[in-house]
Length: 133
Image (cartoon, rainbow, N blue to C red; front, side, top):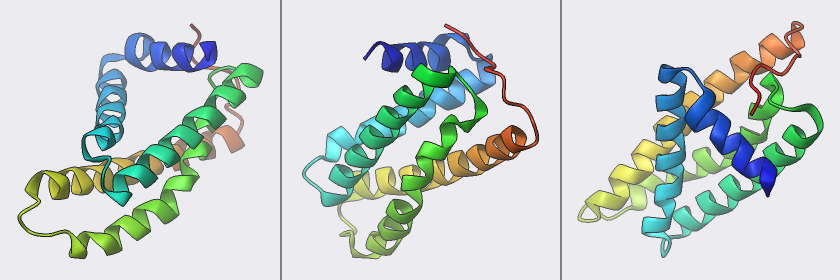
């Protein structure tokens, strides 16, 4: 559990301002699933985020804050594809849920692109932890 708090502390306190704002946005959009928890999409998002965070905590315990932490977001790929297909079935009057779903899909897709760049940098040799709590 301590590793989870250290990870959140690094993202919300130690990151540079732009990365910190992005991290806060990513956390907020994903945590907003709790507002829509009666929807299956929100339940799947909560499970995916929980699994990713647990995996990140395990990686962090062993290697600290390395560029490979983002590979835990790979679970989002099938989730986002499924949610994009489900988007058409969301009733038009459920505006808040629809807005959250669009924000989640866009935000997590951008995060996956950032994660791919970080993984590339890791493979190219940037393997040292770059943030510490």
